[in-house]
Length: 355
Image (tube, rainbow, N blue to C red; front, side):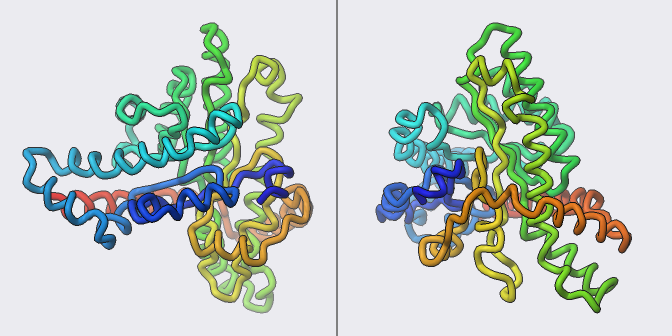
């Protein structure tokens, strides 16, 4: 973990629950080098529906004169505040570079820029912690919201990015937000952001097409997501490299860091660190579910800035997909809509549980 930090990469935990908080496991993971936390509606659904740690409070909330969404916020906001407080010393000692906790706004607001802005402002004010990252989806409306939120100084994690077009859109919006903030004379170092690029789901979708259209080349499977990340990192350098960000960096601005998400391998034939070891590099974050984090502790290796290796091979893989009439951009759009639908469904199930 020390070596990864030296190479510029933070490892975050893609999980949060009362069990992790109450049992001290989260504190131990922070001591071991984990430096942030991501959550989403599916993570909270799994925690609240299955853990006995919530049962007493859930029953009490059902008897309160509150709407289901208010009951849900009582539960999730409490966990996020506790996690933020636990990571606050790291945020302070790192000068605001590490120690963040992400919390998602209502995913049903994805097509509504104004609604997303209002929800993000409300969550930011309600949690009231400097190391909160408000999570919004990387739709076209989400990119519009991002520009406004960054200009206002609200930390944002843009989630559900499955294509380079989606990523570039939010990178440009983040930069415009910084420029607005600079023009208004506001401190740039006060705002931090990440862009979450989802990996394993992309491989699952493309592998099915490769098996159908190029069955004689099984070695092409399991390569798309890593290629996507490597090419997106090149986009990151064009948007946020030392030369690109220029005066904004000199004024204290943080680059919007690529965050590798959906990093557990869905195909058991693939290495368990497929989306970890090849994607190490400066100003990156990798958020890992507990099983993948355990694998990293057990046998992970930090071999250098691997995100900068085999970029030509990534471009060649992209060209091969085009020759097979496989369009990663179109697949990315479909996956983003599927991801939103899955988060909306998880949110609805949670609200039903609390009704």
